[in-house]
Image (cartoon, rainbow, N blue to C red):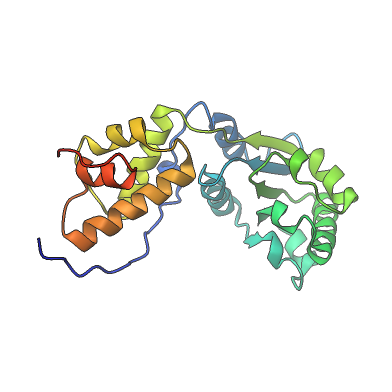
Length: 226
């Protein structure tokens, strides 16, 4: 079969509230985002594995509140008083565990936000008690914040995530592809994203619809019939 020209176009990730599939593994986190303005503490920590929906929910909350979204590593050089005067999202806080300058800025942001009564949403993969931030004062403050964990997916959620990932790439797999992937792929959000990306690449390069045959190649099962 002649190979087709392929263009590595970026996927358009849908990040609206209606695009987020609610399941038992993430229901608490979704409820906390939906309850913006009535958290037990002014700060909320979202934790969970890569691809579990932390960034999606952060975007939902940012849209609701008008909050800017910043990576924790980008805090040095920011206007912290201006940032603290409004709701804000700080992503991937564990990445600055040993970054003294970024930790100091986060400490000031946390304190100023609390003093001004402004909500602050923080994200990270492990639960906050495992962030091991070198600045004990900010670690203790984060430990006292409200925490919602997004847990690893069950079949229903992983199926919905795969469908969304395909849709983000404007790819329509054959009907038996997602059930096949659920049986054979690594059961993680990160693996789902990588699998869909590779299936999209193969589909484009070979000019074929995403089928169980392609899926078998990607998950390392070997040849399979469409």
